[in-house]
Image 1 (cartoon, one colour):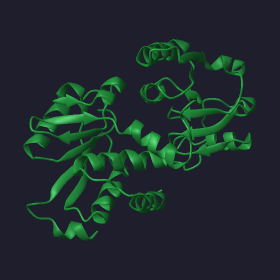
Image 2 (cartoon, rainbow, N blue to C red):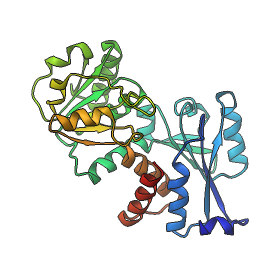
Image 3 (cartoon, rainbow, N blue to C red):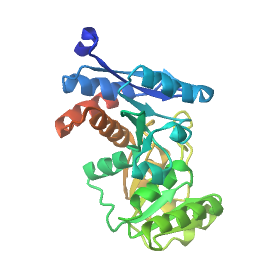
Image 4 (cartoon, rainbow, N blue to C red):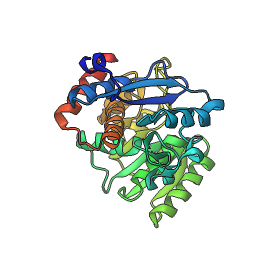
Length: 289
């Protein structure tokens, strides 16, 4: 890319910290955006092991690294080392974007706003939707927190109902109403109604274990109007195929990846990325996969 050959003392540095980082697509997003916006910025992945997280952040601060993305396993563990945490990120309990401030770094969660922007781009309405969330890990919890004020109801499906119940209770506290409930996977046949917006929030089906899915029962998928898998590799998961086979629409997580990156870039550079620029980056991501 052209801007990379013109690095000088004014070039801003941003990057990703995580472990592993070898296969990340984030440099594709941010270096393409820097080129499209004619910004003097480079983005690099940095391998940071858990034992060195605090010193890595101190080093980044000393080097005046403008902004960082944070990926596994650091999204929760980095919170105590931040100067400030955005309200949504504090609710979710995880950050994936850091912005340099005068005293240190401010943490944001752009994953969930990224998911909302991706869904809006695909014409998916969360307002008033009956939402199913598959799984009860950190990502499932984040989705439930993000949707609790807009959805008409949220059902969290998980192998162990206790984990799902803990999330539902917490989410109801945030929403100030009984919007979320838990259900054990073994009871998924008891789900009433149809036309659910289902979010697949587990790692099942991710490359290379592409044949895995949380639920195999074809009757379950007849209740789904729209299935959204947060996995983007492979481009079509088994979950997505089962949704389509039952007559529903299915989407993968590539646009969520795109928009969480775009929102981070906008925070670092105080700019707004256009739909046309987003489309160029999306095309590059698709080609990479």
